[in-house]
Image 1: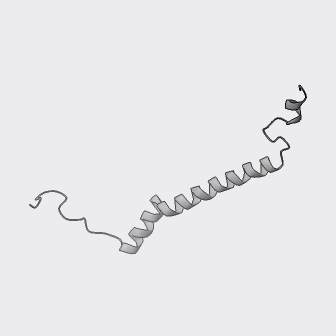
Image 2: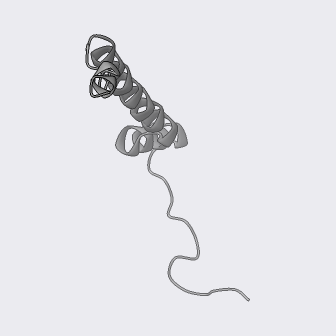
Length: 71
């Protein structure tokens, strides 16, 4: 079944395929590149939090001596 109507054939390009591809890449970017950039940003955030935690003296747990003092 063939569709006969507007849009059956692609419009002719007034620029080269290479220029079209370059313009498309510049406009929309590459998903892989954007994803890799986002992963790197998140990894940098994780590293910053780890560094802050490494420099922090608070362990998040109370000292065990406080539990034994009441006995």
